[in-house]
Amino acid sequence: MNLLPVMSNLRFRIVLAAVIFQSCSSPVYIYKIINTYPHDSSAFTQGLVFDNGFLYEGTGLSGLSSLRKVELETGNIVQIIKLPDNYFGEGITIYEDRIIQLTWQSRIGFVYDRESFDLLEEFHYPTEGWGITHDGNRLIMSDGTSRLYFVDPHTFEETGRIEVSDNNIPVTRLNELEYIQGEIYANIWLTDTIVRIAPETGQVTGWIELKGILNLEENDGPVDVLNGIAYDEKCGRLFITGKLWPKLFEIELLTAEQ
Image (cartoon, rainbow, N blue to C red; front, side, top):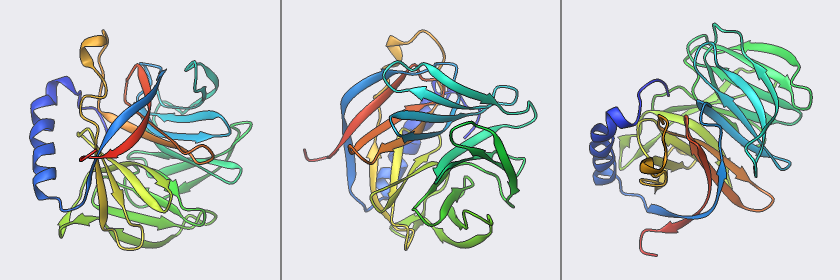
């Protein structure tokens, strides 16, 4: 989620990752980098979607929040709209011909036309807004707890919820979300970890360990935590990035034994 830099919290993140993997009972996946692409290092990435050959990205920080359309290969911004300065932008998803974007503590979401970025409507929700995705029928939202909410994509009313856990231990700090082949993928805030979740039960089906994917020694500017998952459904490509990261990665998942 928000404003805790990676470098000043590296020790905490290492301890946190150790606690996670000691307590989990689900499979652990590692990664292979397939491609590396440039990413705007000033983008505080809060939401990421791949659609029709482009990345759509929601960025955060008050006064700097935006919605943007980005070329994958170059990282160039081809379309952008800024949020009013009093909003801290959060996760995004594309549902039908609309882009839906959350805000952090304002409890207000925005709905845009996918092509023009024209603002179509606003909606409200009773929690903080962190991540959002959809399964084709329902929006799925996170609020930084272990809870995920199912929401009607037209009325924005809650239709259900699940508690996410592994080995009966709640999994908290669920952040940016992506629905991939029947599972929910979620960044775990303050870690280099993505969790895979069964939407029917909230049970964790796997953990993705991405420690070391961004080599900090190669980067001059400040970076923040891993955040941003996008999936190219047509080609089966999985993309990840982070807040203020200069790179975006296409990865392949491997079991820890591979």
